[in-house]
Amino acid sequence: MDNTALPLIRLSEYFAKYPGIGMKTAKRLAYQTMSFDIDEVEAFAKALIDVKESVHFCPICQTFTDLSICKICSDAEIGKRDMSTICVVETPKDINAIERTSEYHGVYQVLHGLISPIDGITPEKIKIKELLTRLKDSDTIEIIMATNPTVEGDATALYIAKLLKPIGIKITRLAFGLPVGGILEQTDEVTLFKALENRNVM
Ligand SMILES: [Zn+2]
Image (cartoon, rainbow, N blue to C red; front, side, top):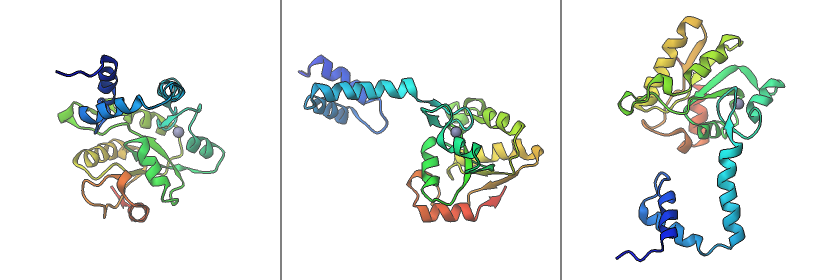
């Protein structure tokens, strides 16, 4: 018989919603919560609510921000970054990976997903139309497709490249000497810098 107190089970079920957390770990986290002071637990609960209440999509690049426009886009508006180059990534975390190289000075576009028909993710379900809208009256010279070198990442890059071809913008793809299936986030700065520097025209 499971003698776990009901509130602990309820909390465990929430922890188990996170990727990579099984029920066993979720229960351990729930029990661990019992060792926190009430102040800490209240701050934790408030941090969860804050994420949902104050974080939204940047209206320009679609990354997550708690500002009216994100820091990178606002730097671009005051000329601190090159607005003519847009690097297209899958997730906001990928921006941080590329920023760590300190070699990229353009702006970004976050897709929030990759096209994957098997999983029911059609082009309309990711932020491609936001990219198209953004390109309408912009002076963009180059789009760097920096989606991961996976089946979905390649398919998404190709789809967008085809879509943009008639507009006449130069479209490049990161030169992945990266391990196939490698994830930007887990790639070291040097490798990522090389992938950026040796990017190929699509
Ligand atoms: Zn932005």
